Image (cartoon, rainbow, N blue to C red; front, top):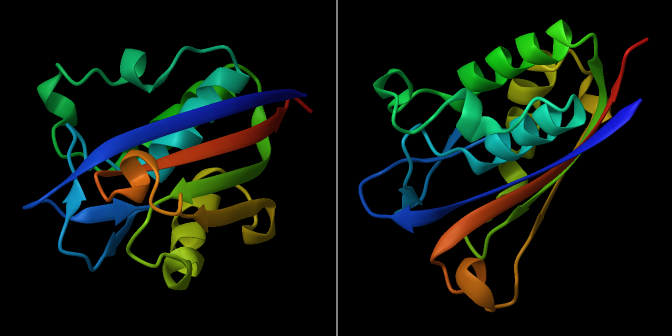
Length: 157
C-alpha cells in the first residue's frame, strides 16, 4: 500500500465556467487554467501520481501542449488511472477537501462523487469529499481563487 497527497489551486476569473469534480457549478466566476481548471480532479490526480511515484499533473499534461486546452479534467483523471494501473496499483480510497469561500458546494457533492468515483473504480462510499472556507483569510477566503487537497491510498493487491 502507498499513500499520495495532491494539491491544486486556480485563480477565479470572469468569463470561465466553475468546474469542480466534473460538475459545472452556477457561479459568476470560474477558474482560470489551461484545461477546465478543475482543482478537485487535479488534486486527486496529483495524489494518485504521487502514490505510484509517477511525477505530477504538469509533467503528464503540460500547459504548453495545445492538446490539453480546455480539456475536461475527468479525461485527464482517466489517463492518470492508466498510469496507476500500469504501475500495478489501484485506488483504495480518497479523502479530499475543497477550499472556497463561495459558492456553497455541498449540494453538488453527490454528483461530483458520482463523476469521480467510477473513474477511480471506487464505490461512492470510498470517496470522501469535504469543503471548508478560510473565514476570509488568504486567497480563497478573499474570493481570489479556489484550492483542493486530496489524499489517496493505493494498493497493488
